[in-house]
Amino acid sequence: MMNKEDTKNQMIQAVETVRKTNPMAGSITNTVTVNFVANAQLAVGGSAAMVYLPDEGEFLAKVGGATYINVGTLLPIYEQTLPHVAKVLHDTGKPWVLDPVAVGIGSLRTNLLRKFKEYKPIVIRGNASEIIALAGLWGMEGGTDISNVRGVDSTDSVRTAKAAAVALARWTGGAVAVSGKTDLITDGSVMAYSHGGSHFMEKITGAGCSLGGVVTVYATAASPFIAALTATAVYNLAGTRAENKADGPGSFQIQFLDELYKATASDIANNPFEMEEVNL
Ligand SMILES: Nc1ncnc2c1ncn2[C@@H]1O[C@H](COP(=O)(O)OP(=O)(O)OP(=O)(O)O)[C@@H](O)[C@H]1O
Ligand SMILES: Cc1ncsc1CCO
Ligand SMILES: [Mg+2]
Image (tube, rainbow, N blue to C red; front, side, top):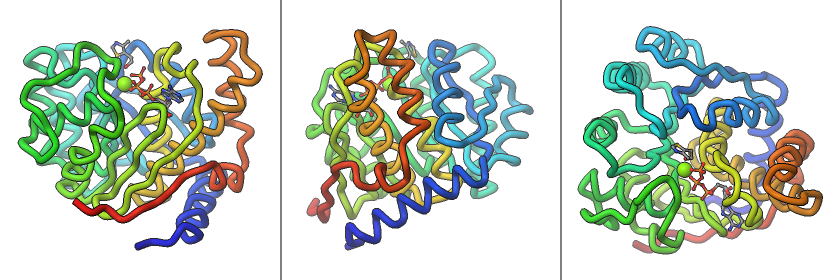
C-alpha cells in the first residue's frame, strides 16, 4: 500500500503544480452552482470555462488538462453534448470527472448516466445516495436497484456507500470520492477517510458540485486518487476555518472561498485523514 508520507508529498506536489501552472479545466455543469464551481476552481489556482454545446465541449475536452461533467440541471441540448464530449474524452485518453447528481430522476439523466459506464470517468464524486444509485445503474456490487435519491441531497451515510465506491473505482481504474461529514476516497485498493468541513456545507448549494470542479483541477496534475484526496482535504480544511469566521450560510460561502485561496500545500496535506487497505 502507498504509505501516508508519500501520499502527503504527492498532495503537496499537486497543490503546488496547480498554483504554478494555472491549468485549464473545462466544465459542463449545472446552472444552479456554475458560478460557485468556477470561483472555487480559480481560488485553488485553476482556470475555468463553462460550456453547453457539443462542439464547444469537444474543444475544451481537447485543450483542457481535465474536464468536469455534472448532470445537475439537464437541458435538451445535453442529450447531444454529454455523450459526444464523454466519448471524445474517453477516445483521447483525457481525464474527466463525473458528478452523477440526482441519478435516478427522469429518463434523460438515467440514459446519459448509463452510457457513461463505457466512457470511464477517472473520478466519480457524489454524495452517498448518488454513489450507491450509480453503482446500481451500472449493475455493480454495493449498488441498489431501488434508489434512495429523492433530489440532490444525500439520504444515506458515507459508510453505506463503501462497497459501491470500491466497485465503481475498480471498473473505471480511477477513484471515487463519497462526500459527507467524513469523506471517503478510494481507488479500489486503498481507502482514505478525510475529516473536517462544516455543517454549513449542507446549508449552501454547490459544496459538492464545486468540490467536483476542484477535483478536476487537481486531476490535471495528479493521479485520480491524489486529485480526489487533495481536493477533499482542501475542502475540509477551508470548511473548518470558514465556519470559525461565519455568522451563517451567506458569510460562510464568502469565507470559504477565501480559505480555499489561502490554504498552503502543507496545511492541505496535513489536514487529518486515515488510510487503510480495502479488504472487499
Ligand atoms: N455535516 C458535514 N460536516 C462537515 N462537512 C460536510 C458535511 N456535509 C458535507 N460536508 C462537506 O461538504 C462537501 C460537499 O459534500 P456534500 O455531501 O454536501 O455534497 P453534495 O450533497 O453533492 O452537495 P451539492 O449537491 O449541494 O453540491 C464535502 O467537502 C464534505 O466534506
Ligand atoms: C439544488 C440543485 N438542483 C439541481 S443541481 C443543484 C445543485 C446541487 O447539486
Ligand atoms: Mg451534489
